[in-house]
Structure formats: structure tokens, C-alpha cells
Length: 611
Image 1 (tube, helix red, strand yellow):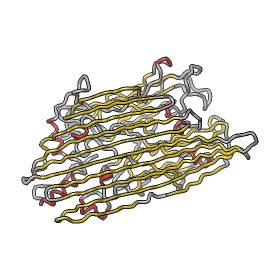
Image 2 (cartoon, helix red, strand yellow):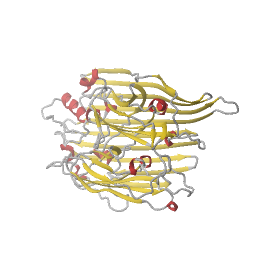
Image 3 (tube, one colour):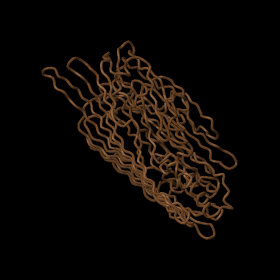
Image 4 (cartoon, one colour):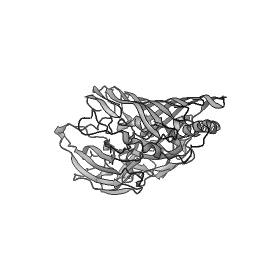
């Protein structure tokens, strides 16, 4: 992901030194000079987490069904695969024994399916690496790896709920895991990974509710690698697919459709939130394209929805000491953003080929994108009367205020980037002359990014305050005008917020040595309320609910470097993560808090039950 700077600093002027360091902060000191300094960590990781330097997160494990429903069946996918080059590793998936469902719409054989993956890197020197896993060319895991040091080979545990993928897992499938890794005389950390699936049985008549799972899954790009590079705004990931009009001779139409989107920033886009307008890129020695990025989705060329890009920071990002032992939010296990495409149910049901596509607005160089389209079907249904309308902002309007001026020959000032956007997608199905089903998805987004530059002969400071907010309101209406009939409305509202604060200050001594102090506050917040959950597939009323999820990572560290720009140490490292979830219907509470100092865990407290 990060790259080694190919720049000599020995003969640079102070102004040139500042510019070079400014650009180096885009590779966040994960070049050779920094990596050779990690020998000072000397962390232990056995036994109790407190006192350990091993990678740790506060993220909860996937909740298990009650034990009374039976023990799970374990299916090993692969064990101790070695990654020392850029060749993906393949594996074969074979489902456990099960009784096939009697009908396409019969309950599936499993109450829950969980992917469990354990990864470790040997002690040594290595970059953070991107990791993707596919089953049947469908992405089931996307994340990055932790960086080792000469005295510690970190290990970590990952879980994902794959219950929605059940129909894919009913048959044998090819699998692939891609963790591209360079191993040579300099970069010595070798990555190993093992993974298995846990299948929890479902028994009809047990009182347990059968899980609602997607009937069809269409992966983008639909390759074993599971990823596609988007080099610019015009780069597009697309797939042409056809939803069958019948499944095992039963007529079907689309009930709901969702697109789960991963958009991972790399290279010049890795730290897109610190990018500047093209007109200021050279002056500030930063990458261009502005600080705004967004995923845009279209169906048959028609705007269908958009997704915010989460500002993930990898374990080599900004300053590797920041993320040892607590990585940033979701760094090891990305959470996709789900776009509700259900208003397009009628056109997608006509049995003709359709094309779904996505691109990243303002992508410069570059994003890796993956997506899965989940389709839920109505059985014994053939109604194709209806349509879809889209209103609002087809493109995200940008307002950029530049206030950069030269002070004693150095650029100083602020850049403010603002975008607000509204999009309404409404689809309807005519069931009869007196009944119409209407699905409406409204997206209201706001984005602000404020950057402040303070530069002189002895200091280079870039402070970033960013906030991404998105409210999605999903409404399902059964409008019935027949005598004696009543219309009904189901409502779900999700408020999402991605606050990010990054303060980076580099100061220099008269001999050319110096320090970089970095303070990071990274958050992932979601509030939900309503009386139905669109993610469950079919529109079914539930008890009114409200929930709040919060995942917050804070980190601070000061790097010390000599006049040759070699890292000589660090000081004041401290970090924390607090993951919490509170919900009603039924009441639920979970809180896990961890803290670290000097790259070792100092506090670990967990309470409540995992969501």
C-alpha cells in the first residue's frame, strides 16, 4: 500500500526539506528508514492482554445462536497458508451434510453461518497488506494486515456473519484468498492465514425464527481476486446480470435488492481526506483531487444511490506506532456500506439483462472496489406493473473555499470543502386496481473537510477536521383503496456519521533533526430507529426499535528523527478504542474498552452481550 520515497534529502534547502517531509507524510514513514527502527518495541503478547504488545481490537465477535439449538458444524477452508509473494492462494469449499430445502422459499438448513479467520505475521519488517477472500467469486472478507516489528509477530482474529450468503454455500465452490506480500532481504515478515466456517443448525418447529437470506447473489467484479482498480472518476466497475422469472418452475419477481460496497483507498488516494485541490497540490506538495470521495451507483445508466467512503487508516498509516497494539477503526476487517436498491424491483424483474455499475467520485490514483448484489425474491408472483423515479442531486455539488497565502515564502492558511446532497428513489408495484406497494429510499448527505496549514522554516503543520454524515430513510407503503381495507406504512431511519480529526505537526531543530507529533480521533457512529429493518429482506413489521452503535479509536504519538531523516525513536505513545452498542426491542447493551501506552495494553474491560 505505502511506498518508499525515492528522494535524496542530503542537499535539500530548509524549504525543500519541508516540502519533502510533507510529501513523506503521505507515505507515513513506512519506508525503509522507519522500518529499521522498530527494534525498540520489544513487546510481549502471551497470556493476559494487559501488558501485551500483540494486536488487539475492541470489536465484538459475531454472536452465536443459543446452545439449545445444537452445536455447529465446522468446515475448514484452509490452514496455515503462507503468503510470501503476490500470488493468490486457492482453496475448495464443500458444504457440510444437510437436508436440501423442499422448495426454493423453504427455510434454509442453517440458523447462522460464521466465517472465522486467524492471521499472523512473523517478526521482522513488513508493510501492512490488503487481504481479500472470495467464495464462489463472491467477496466474503476484505481488510488489511497488521505490521510486525523485529521483536513481535502480531496475530489477530476475524469473524464475519455469512448467514445472508447461505444459498451460495449450499453447493461446492472454488475459493481464493489474496494477501499480496513482498519478502526479500529487507522485508522479512511472512504472513500466514487459516479460516473455517461454522454452520449452526436450524430446526423447524423449535421455536427459532428462520433467518431471512438472499435468494440470489451477484458479485462485482465476479472474479476470484474479488477486487477491481478504479483509477479515476471515470473508471467504472460494472456487471450485467439477469434475475430469472422462475426458480424451479415457481414464478418470481424481485422483492428487495441491496448492494454491499467496499471502496478501499490506495496510493495517492490512500489518505484522500488530506488531499487538496489540484490548483494547490504543487504549492502544498500534496496530492490533488480535493478531499472529497464518494461511491456512486447506477442501474442501466440511471443513478440509483451513493455511498460514503470511510477514512480507514492502515497500520502503517501516518505513524506506525499509533496503531500498535490497537489498530484504527475497522482496519483489519472492513464493514461494507449497504445501498438499498429495492425501488428498482419492477425493472429488475422483467427477465432481461441489466447492468449495475459503480465508480468513486474524484478518484485519483486509486481505489480498489468490490461489491455484492443481494436479491430477495417474491415467490408465486408475476406482477410487472409499476416503475421507478429518481429525483435530487445526480452529482455531489462541491463548495471549496481556498485561503492559502505565502508567509515568508511558505504556504499558510486554510482549505474548506463542503458538499450536501439529496437523492430520492421511489419505486412502485401495482398489485391490483386497488392496491399499490411503494418503496421509497431517501438519502441526505453532508460532508465537510477543513484543513489548516501552518508552515515556516522550523515547522510543517497540517490539521484536518472532517465529518461525513448520511441519513437514509426507507419507507414501505401498502396503499390499498378497496372498501374495508387499510393502508399501512413501515419506516426505517439510519443516521450515519464518520468524524475524523488528524493533527500532524512536524518541527525541526537547527541541526536538521526533529519530531512529528500526531493526534488522531477516528469514529464510526450509527443511530437507527423504526418499525422494520430493510436489511432483513422482505418488508415485515417488527416492534418499534432504536439503537446506537459507536466505534471510536483515539491515538497519539511523537516520532523522533535525525538530520538524515532516520527515525531514532518515539515518545508519548497512547491509544484507546471504545466499541459500544445499545438497542431496544429487545433491550441490549454491549461495551468493550481497551487502552494502551508505550505500545502495550494497559486496560481491557468488556460488559454486556455482543450485538
